[in-house]
Amino acid sequence: MAGVQDAQKLDAAASLKEARALVDIPAVSYGRIFAENYGEGPAVAEAWEEMLQCYGEGQATSLRAMCWFLHWGAYVGNTLNGIVGRKPLASSATLLFKAFMSIYYGSLYIFVVTPVGYLIRFLPLVPAWFSTVFNLVLISVASIWIV
Image 1 (cartoon, one colour):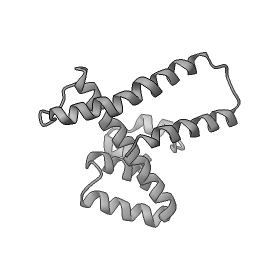
Image 2 (cartoon, helix red, strand yellow):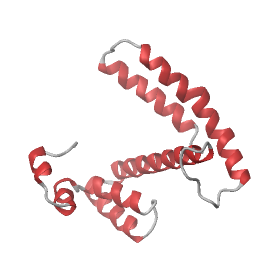
Image 3 (cartoon, one colour):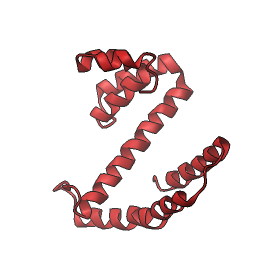
Image 4 (cartoon, rainbow, N blue to C red):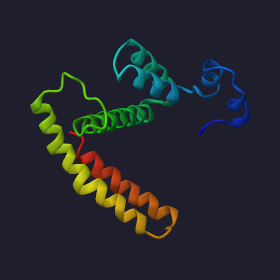
C-alpha cells in the first residue's frame, strides 16, 4: 500500500484498528471518512480541518476535489450499471433521472471511454513523460463531463 514504510507490519496487523493505525495519515483518514459519509456531516468537517492544518489550503483542496471526483464517478458508474441491470438501482430513481443519466453519461462511456480503452491496448510501451501527458488529457476530458 502506498505510504506504508514496512509492509510486513501491515500484513501482521491483527485487526482493522491496527491496520488503520499504520496508514491513517490525514489524507487517508479524510478519504475514508468522506466515503463513509458521502462527503457530508460533522465527521467530514472535522477531518477537513485536520487536513487543512496538516497540508495547507492548496493541497487539502486538491485532495477534497479528488474525493468528490471519485465519489461522483462511482455514483454515475453505479447508476448506469443499475439502469442496464448489472446492479440494483435505488427505487427512488425516476424515469426522468434514468433518461438524463443514460443520455448524458451513457454517451460519455459509449463515445469516449470505450474507444479510448480499446485504443490503449494497441499502444506500445511509452516513456513516463508521455504517459503523464496522456493522463492529463484523459483527466481534462473526464472533467468536462462533471457538471
